[in-house]
Image (tube, rainbow, N blue to C red; front, top):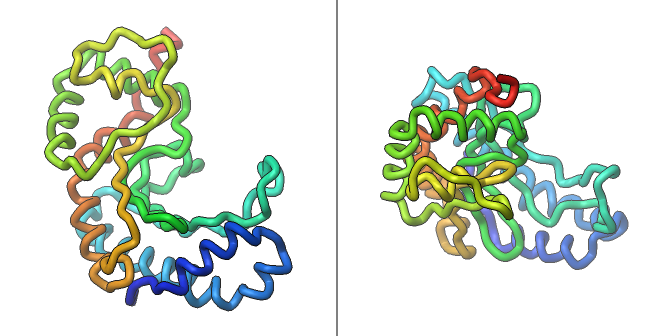
Length: 226
């Protein structure tokens, strides 16, 4: 059962940021395992079990990311991530292209929410088509999300804005490659407490209607093919 992260978790994250090379990591691998990876797995397991029990109809799965960067995508960075995340989502071939609930911890803060890592162009085209043809459905969800100011809509916008069906939908309609409803918090006592599990469950619960809506987009025809 998750008991909370510790100050040593944050020490490790700062350490790997400024010493991102194999020798340092191997010398501190036990700290990585005991203060970061194992607690993250425990948190993921507890969140998944409780959340999937609430929403059996969603057929959810979970994962904790690896700290090792993809060697093909280092781009001058070190071989290790200086952050770690977990996701809860539906089982799909490419989880990064599907809507996911997530929690992430990094040296400066922690964040969580709902969104896409890399939504495909077809997914965003389907979403815009829905907003064009059935705007009230998305407007209702946007109004509901606005009741939770802790969540901020993030994501890259088109440089040349598209004409949205309404002002309310404009920020969503003009997202280019996906978006997130994200909450960021500075390291606080909650992060170091077992109560983090219950807090995240209740925060994710607020976003379930949006998740249900987004998770059905793949079943829509691609409007670009018409």
